[in-house]
Length: 337
Image (cartoon, rainbow, N blue to C red; front, top):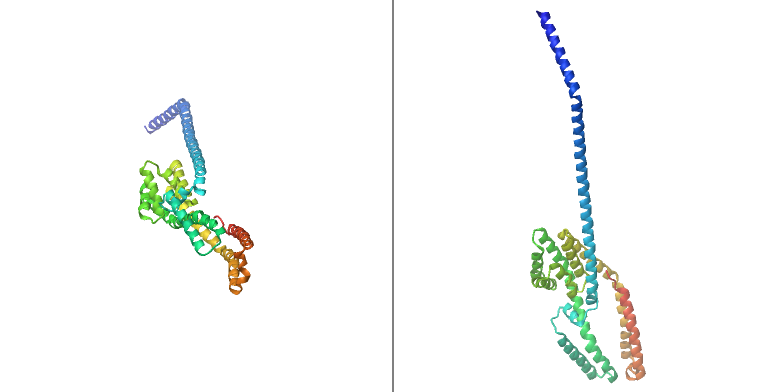
């Protein structure tokens, strides 16, 4: 019984093994095909992934090229606008100079004040006894020179006050933008809280925006009423950010840092040139001091310079040469930073 059972079991095992071998032989091709299909599918999926990566990379490159082209076009447009504004900023008309000085003065009234100033100085010169030949020169200097010098002085003082406060205003805008406020609200905040002249310049931007002008276009016009490079920088940064995108807070933060570094460099240059300025002041004042000392010690020796026509000619030529020397020394001591 045991032998029969063993024989049956062996037979069954051999039959099963044979059936398995036959089934493997019959299905081997199909299994191989399925493996090949799986490999091909994996290859196709990998190729699709690579194509997607290549496509994404190409899209990123195309976007970068497009953005770079947009920035270049923006810079070209800004350069054209800046060239148009250069004449107004560097050599503005008298009416614009009065606005840049922070004066709300009509041009007709300015001419009236200039005439009164010239007549007043001429009257003073006549009272103190200056020669009649000098009075027309005093009238010209008083009517044309002194008022325009006052405008230039007020412009320079206003620009200096603007540059002292402008980096702080930029820092406030950066913090406002980082905290989530839109640029419009940040500009209104500066317009209402900052001291003059920064507050006044930003109020012009707010007023221009209310009249339908965009903030970038209003900011680029700031250099018309504030004749300094820093105001032009601010307008260019806002214009580029509005057209090409980017991190506005980072751009304005970098601008604020650059302005502070420029201010430090200007202070350093002024300190280094102070010795030359002191020497120029001493050299320029020596003729007047010597003339005063000679007049105190021996008046009869120096009075012919003021009483004779030859003396007047000598004084005129000396004044011209001295003015040329002072101008040359001034140009040598002034550095643009």
